[in-house]
Image (cartoon, rainbow, N blue to C red; front, side):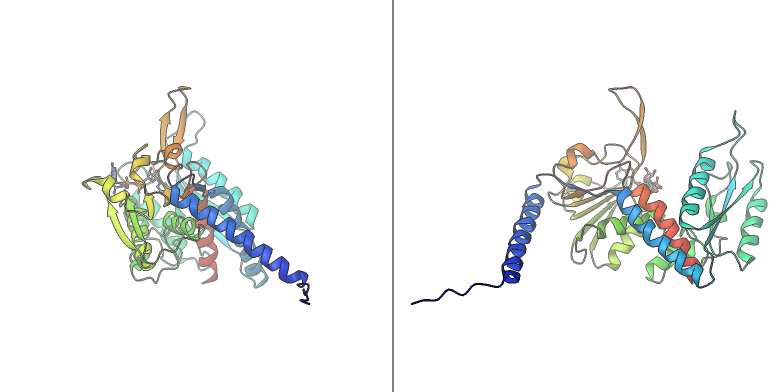
Length: 326
Ligand code: NAD
C-alpha cells in the first residue's frame, strides 16, 4: 500500500508564495509587454522616502557633533505690491523643509540693485567660512548678470546644486559627490522602477547643461546606450520609439505623444510648462509628455506635477547632508 506523507506547512506556504509571486510578476510583465497601462512613478512618495533617510543622516551627524546647514543667497526681485518674488516663496518653503529635517537654513538676501561684485563678494565670504558646508544661489539674478559667472565662484565642495562647472565636469569622470540635483533625481526615479540600465537604450530629449547633458553622462556611466536629442534632431519620433528609457527635458508642452513611445518603456518627464486649460480657462502646470495618452503605452511614467520636481528638492537636501559629511 502506498503511504502519503504530509508535507510540512512551511513547504506549502513557500510554494503558495512562489506561485503568487510568479502570477504577480507575469501579470506585471504582460502589462509591460502589451502596454496595458503604466505604473506611475510617484515623485512625492519617493521624495518622502528620501527625506526620511536624510532626516536619519542629519541626526546621526548631529550625534557626531556635526550640525548640517544650508546657506542660500537670494537677490530680491523688483519691488512689487508686497515686495516679494517667486524665488522668495521658494526660499521660504525650502527653509520649512530644512527645519523639518533638522537642517539649519540661512538666507542671505541682497537688494535688487546688487551688482556682480556684491553677489560674488557674498559667495566668496561664504566659501571662506569653514563652518559653512553648503551654498546655493537662487535664480533669477538681476537682468544682465550671467548665472554662470556666479556659479563658477561657489566652492565645488559646498556647491550643493552641482552647478559649478567643476562639479558638472566631474560627472564625466564619475568622481562627483555633488551631482546636479535634477539629473540625480532622474536617476533615482529610474532606479525606483528596478529597470536594468546596463545594455538598455536611453533617449534624452533636451541637452541643457544642467539637465539633459548630465543625465546623458550618468546614463553612460551605467553602461546604457545613450542618444541625446535637441530641437534640431531630425526624425525625433524615430529616436524616441527606440527608447527603453525616455527622459524628456525640453520645456515643450505636449512634445511627446503616445505614438512616439515604445510599449513598456520607462518615461521620465522633467518639463514644467504653464498652460491654459481649454476646458476651464485656468492656468495649470503640465510636463512635456502627453501624460494621459502615453500612460496607456509606457510601462512606467512620472507625472507633472508630482514627479521629478519633489525628488529634485529632496536631492538638494541629500547633497546638503553629503557636503556636511565630507
Ligand atoms: P533649456 O531651455 O536650457 O534646454 C532645452 C533643451 O531642449 C535644449 O537642448 C533644446 O535644444 C531642447 N529642445 C527644445 N525643444 C525641443 C524639441 N521640440 N525637440 C527636441 N528638443 C528640444 O531647458 P532646461 O533648463 O533643461 O529645462 C527643460 C525643462 O525642464 C523646462 O520645462 C524646465 O522648466 C524643466 N526643469 C524642471 C526641473 C525640475 O526639477 N522638475 C528642473 C530643471 C528644469
